[in-house]
Length: 106
Image (cartoon, rainbow, N blue to C red; front, top):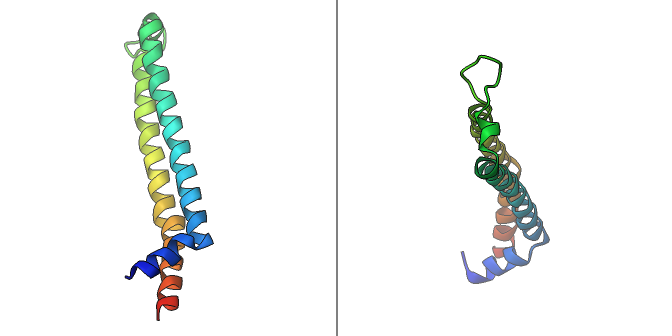
């Protein structure tokens, strides 16, 4: 691909929209993950007794373990959501942009 074609792709409004949507989505997921992770770390630092309490009276599973297990599973789900959207919507938009640029190049 020529540099002219790359420049046409960069200035294409569809490309601008793709970059904005993908960036906004990625940053939203990043803030969710960082907020949950650092929130958990802050609870560990300032309220460790809360996390050490049993989930049910007389049980061995603590609130901290349950919360961390939930976070682990939730982060995997967020990853799957991102991959699904990236492989679907974002890939379709990318293919449209590339096809349009290739047509203009001929």
